Length: 396
Image (cartoon, rainbow, N blue to C red; front, side):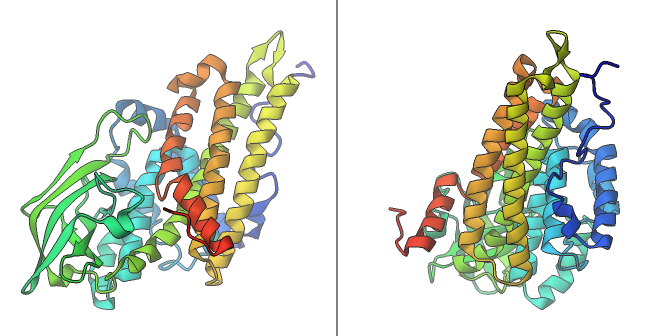
């Protein structure tokens, strides 16, 4: 073995945790994280490119996720926000589509029930949700509304005795083609406030059509939802969801998850780019022996570690009950910007091989665009943080 060859199975800092952030976890959490990583390495990562190329969500993975028992690690299992965040980043590191499925079911959907449903509603619904006996979706974004959804929700809810009549449309709703339930946020025509409803997807007037031709998250079944006079009993109105401020309680927390996804996406890029650079021979020696290649690898790792450091601190603040909307906004804006830089550098290291999914990087590069856009655009999250530090709103 020449001095320029490296054992691919014994790379330095093999897990990429260059600054040992995982040492902040408890022994119990590190043990559980190792278990989850082993499962992801066996069940997800080897299959992820195939699922992505086919553009179909692997529903056979759902019973296996149920056995892994990963839904609601904080509320139900007593783990820290830091542990939950690192787990979500590891799901993303293995496959962004599976991580997004979990982010919808466990984050947005389950989070809505945990934060906004009454105690009685939670007792009735959560057991099936935690066990994946019921799959959930989250219906907020609309075809004609994105960043203005707080004040511009077009889907309506009209009270009719003991029922509500829902009309409107939602777009980009993950899991909605096969979910059992979806939380729909709609504007009450009487008081003009956004309210939340648990909608059974078998109800008359509900339909979901899969969105095709995506260049990112191809395994996620995003859908266009149409609600045509869907009748929902008042028993399924989330009792704590009566204004957009209530909805934002869920979004504040799920933006943390997207920040962690940005970390995981960068670690995935680092994994693939480093291995390729060490393995690939150019001019008779490993690609990693060239200075500019090392510079790009260090840029990816530096971006990932700075992003992770921000997310670690924000998770700690969340555990302390001190995290604010502007903290989540800054984190989402910063980490996803660094992510874009990282996946571009990773794709560059692979050259032409970086644009075919055979080498995994093309999928990582493309999926990053979805993370960059959802849970609030770069611009809106920047302005939320800007308002916090100036006291001046610059949205319009």
